[in-house]
Length: 223
Image (spheres, rainbow, N blue to C red):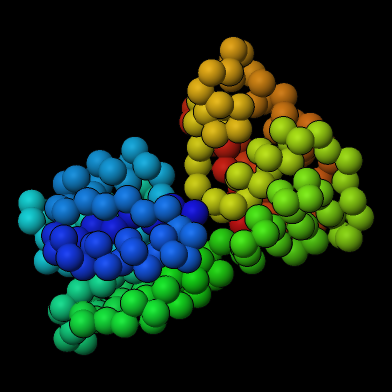
């Protein structure tokens, strides 16, 4: 899973990057608000760690801009510890608020807690669990109501990728790149065909999740 750190303190970024990489996360870094927004759009992270006092565009503005385009979890990590600042950050859409100086171990625990709340149960074995649905990329197995569903590898990979990023919209081109690779010779109809087959096998109106078509854009796993 990828985490974007937006903080102008280079040393703090290095410490966060070190601890997160030890936990198996991929980390990308930006040192000002404008670069942070651009990197968010390019890198498609699973979570953002955001400072408030940033050059060019402060953390409040960045949070506001990100919330216009995404529901990806945001943890504010800042020296501004007044109640007003915390309330403002949370009202703008932050999922958690940590005051500097901080314990890296606490930060990691908070990150995992936020990810558990927002992305279902995801663990190191590449398993995503939702009500009545389990997608295991380690064993390439999909279970619906504890019954194994027959799916070829690409359908499982596509379902796992979408389910690992709930409520996040991906274009057909992005899904082709992630699942089939940049060198794939084919067109976006490949994605449409696979989505149709997955839906036929697992979707029912009674479940609190579904693969939704976002017209003119692509697909998302909606919960």
